[in-house]
Image (tube, rainbow, N blue to C red; front, side):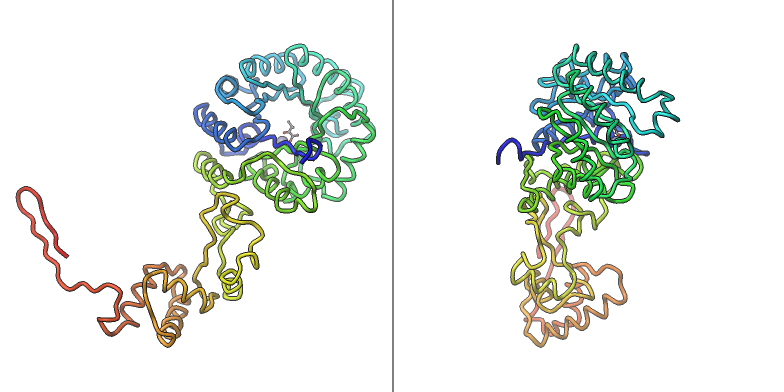
Length: 411
Ligand code: KIV
Ligand code: ZN
């Protein structure tokens, strides 16, 4: 795959992800996550917002000085003191980046910034020029880009590129975009900006559940950096989920014609680690990394998977580091999966006994929400296997002796 088809993964779990209400990581926890992200080969780690707090500054500095491989980015508003703090925090990085941003939509400029478009344009020029005087690698983001006037946006991006920004990011800050429209918008802005040397990036929020779809539509339109977070963590409804973007590009490479450099076998482990450390559980039905992502309960599906996994699985669990496909026994399960489970448990039952056991099992499923393997084993032992000799394990005698010194047990 050529460089022009490579999509860079910009992970912002430690910055936008940590902005999710209820998440607060200390610098050691952030470092542990950053080390795993580096092992997974993400291209850029946005380690934090150095001017936001002394803790954030210290975390970015620690990550910049320790984590090798990816670019380490620090976020900064266009203010000089923010840019200085970001530059200082990433100073020791093997590859450091300042990511500076200002809003460009009419509503943000008028009500939040209280600035005219001309003032915003001037602010961009000054900020990018100053950032470039401190580091080589500068990214500029137009906050609320998707709700900005495309002609003004192109003017702002041209100014940023001409002052030395090499990555230009179009955020859908409020998750308002829809894929077809956003793809066309990104393409129009790229064309109107007309700066072929830059890397185009997108940063999509998930307020309407379309962050991943919007990010992928942008890739089709020419974006070659996607900003995302592990488990889709982030402000409000979160950001585009890293694992979904990466597996979307990989699984549908036939459609997007692009790839990332990620070691996807690390996705499951990183997702679990981030979930544990943030205290945000991964929903069972979450795409790619949910515990049900490779679980099949319906009999028809289970039969299909037993014949050929690809009948109902479009990804291999091992490709994302998942423990493997699971056939979950429940009231929708069929005989094929039931027989397989019973055999895996070590029972050898006749067809007649299997039918009998399955009927009992379904009655149990109606009474009990979760039927475990232990329930099934107990049911087979007590209700199906009448004759002792056909039991899998029979306890004939046992002897337990305790006293001074070693105790002994004989089974
Ligand atoms: O959502 C957003 O616009 C951001 C920017 C700082 C890139 O997080
Ligand atoms: Zn954001």
